[in-house]
Image: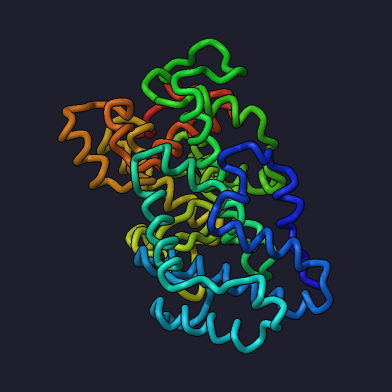
Length: 359
């Protein structure tokens, strides 16, 4: 029997919230799934429902130029759409077809475009509005065997989306649990918000096994070992984590970046090797620090790309992350304070106390 958790998720939300799942176009199938779950024969059609979510995800991936999330030959978006529609038409019983509409091509393309735009745009408001659809997609991904890595990736994006909603709802308000100002925190917008969020987050179960190895690898590259905790922000310490765009491993390295750092990406994919990926990431962070002169800017470049950060620094004649944060992608605006707060919570080292790379 396929377990569908959409009902529990919808019940946990406040119906008066403008971001309630029932208000999201892509959450409507979750409501219908809840109603249909009690009907005879639901188990036989649940896989078709899940396929629809897989197609939505693939649409966003392929529209953004990424790699498909399943180990199958690449296909164009039209082929994937037609395949999903054919399976639905062939296997869904009449009572399901009466209450569930397969998405139109226009709806599918619209979702793919909005998904990519929400991640790349510098609007926290737009990122926050994506929460209901992202949560509904997570429910579906969690029910797909073999998609745990993608589900972990999406759950981390939802963490960013939640923080964006907090920032939009109370701009400039300090986090309730924020202690006195840390050294270096003033140059990191939204640091207080993320410090409060990370203080409430439990340490991942894999940390006891992985973190000593990752810290050792960073130290071997002359990088502060405390920064190895960025693996928690990137992958929840899941070596098998994968993003729809093709990033993989504890540190979510893209294929081209991994190869440039000397890692193999095909049989075996060394991005999933904890020590090798940590050494490569340490070397890359060292290079980024030497180019940009601060850890917040190095982290921004790690997330958004060196070229993007360099252009924004030059165009704004800025010298620190605070000077360019508002021009960077919303995901990066969340990422830098998140990693810095995570490092402080896990290690006690404030952003301004992280030393430069060891000579």
